[in-house]
Image 1 (cartoon, rainbow, N blue to C red):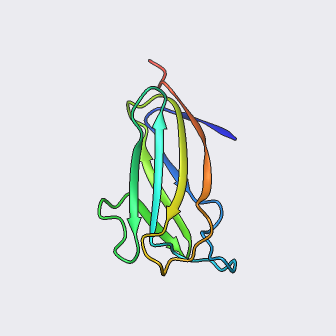
Image 2: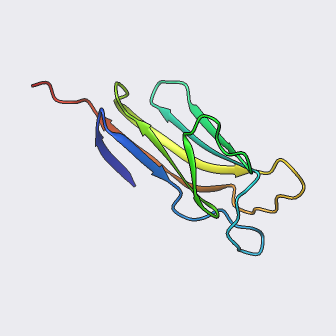
Length: 113
């Protein structure tokens, strides 16, 4: 599903389902990433590491397995494709979900007044 947003808005991207273990229990993986690409530009990736979090403060852990990131669209009109995913960085991470949310946001240029 694509969402239409006016340029200059801060968009909250969030996981729609929690990351889960092999048994289906919600877990915080070793590493969570949020990546987006605006058409024609280089992709941007933010990383949250368990237990230290995201040092840039972009990714916020909302509860076990659930995350969000607030991204400003100021000056960034275009079609955005985004994905939330994880990957293990130790043998202790038994998450089964590689991607929990992905989608498209269309950011329209602000009308000139």
